[in-house]
Length: 179
Image 1 (cartoon, rainbow, N blue to C red):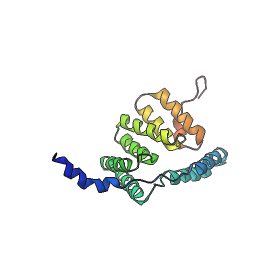
Image 2 (cartoon, rainbow, N blue to C red):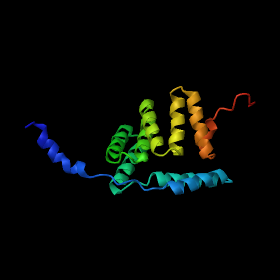
Image 3 (cartoon, helix red, strand yellow):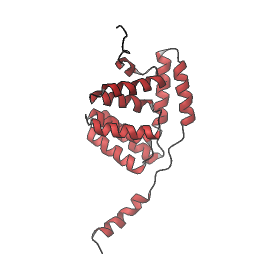
Image 4 (cartoon, helix red, strand yellow):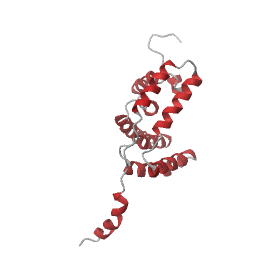
């Protein structure tokens, strides 16, 4: 018998716990995105944007929510390594929960680990293609990497979904436009 087999058997109960599917908020997200296009004021747009964040950060269960909250708290006090560690645990537990990847991407971005951030943003967008936060995060990451043209394209896609994004101020004017 290998020395590691008993250790693995001890760990098995912890690994047996699985993450349920994330709540399906796709219909409400579509409604909010539609409302964003019709919002008359920035205040109304910001309120709708906050509603999207409430949906994205609605974790699949209490265990996942606790990990998400802890990671966001760690990131909030600039413990980026600790945040990334917690988000990695969340991703291992809930590999189909987009916000785990998105939040780890944000912590990576703040750590200036742009390659890791970009990989997590792409994974987020594979799960939720119209995740405005991930699109704008991807834009900022690409711009920070010196890939301005790609960053501008991602930012334009994000602003097309949410014209009230504060990052819209980073859009380059179209060629031939006077400033």
